Length: 118
Length: 115
Image (cartoon, rainbow over all chains, first blue to last red):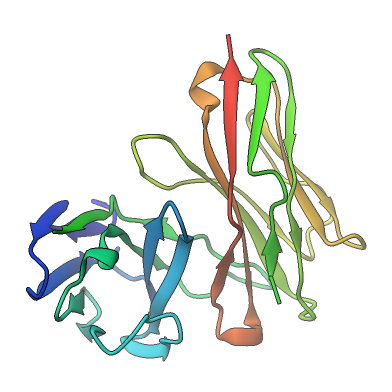
């Protein structure tokens, strides 16, 4: 398996531009998570999906951020308009559903997208 | 309230020595999973070890072991025989059923292994 795939790996854009980050989860995984990581704020959960349905978007910073999961193999995180404070590494992660019995499955992270907004 | 607390922002350890990274958690769900991830300077997040709340024994994976103390709600990571390549950020995480299987991450501990 190729693992979680994210594109682009690096994005440099100017303030006010629209940015779209893409993620392909591991096939068969029911959960998809979007995180943002900065030195100041650490690792923050932005939103996560279960079976393509958004479950919790309380971490989305503001209306400029939106995420979609049109099917089980693709998700996007969009920032419109982008601002310099959005500069961060954005991770996508996927996870299978609950393991058998009382077990839990780990998340598998993508390589991240490093976003720089000038 | 913080679900996962890592109180050590940074730690140093001498190569070949053992080191313990602290993690405490908070949940009222009797069923939960605890995870440790490693993030080297290259940036990728690497899964290290998992402990289920109903597991009778502490989890071990090679040089990694999880010191699980359920009554104290702690899940410390022990790395034995530290290597230079262990220098990285380490995150503790928890997953439970109380919020649709959401993952909660701690703030991380930066480990530096000295030669």
